[in-house]
Amino acid sequence: RSLDLELTALHFRVESAYQLTNNDLLISRRSLTYEGAAKPCLIPISSEPLIFESSMIRVIPDINKIRTLYLFHYLANPLVKTHFIRKYVTGATIKGISQKNLENIKILVPPIKMQDKFIKAANSLSEFLEKSATHEKGVVNLFFSLSQKAFAGEL
Image 1: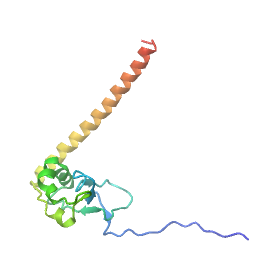
Image 2 (image 1 turned 120 degrees about the vertical axis):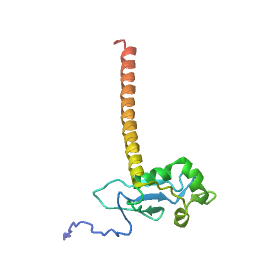
Image 3 (image 1 turned 180 degrees about the vertical axis):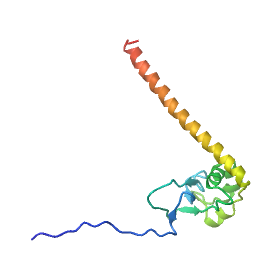
Image 4 (image 1 turned 90 degrees about the horizontal axis):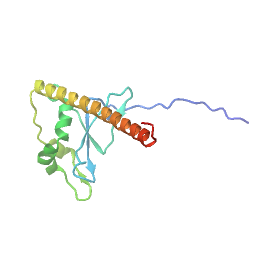
């Protein structure tokens, strides 16, 4: 006797309370180091729904007052972490920050036009660094190629 099996797509629903957009930031709650606690993470643009779980804190910036990318760079800045964030990180073995403590962090918010200029400069720097890394890989590959030919006596 054969079994009649039907293949069906798995149906699920994403709760909007946990769904992320690229305007959100995720902040790590816990880490083994002070540097990892309260570390921000940008959300990429995705055609699929993205959700987060309880070991992260979701921050939804009011983009009319503070740009997501500016806030990300602000929270990731080592000086900001040292002077404004670290005092809210608790724990001995595992360092962590609570949502309540995260809300106590002072954020320096320049006018939107200045934030937009900062974002433009940060994007230009990122593009430059990416091109530099690509160029460096090309130079390294060329060096190894020439080295192999030189040691093989082909030069």
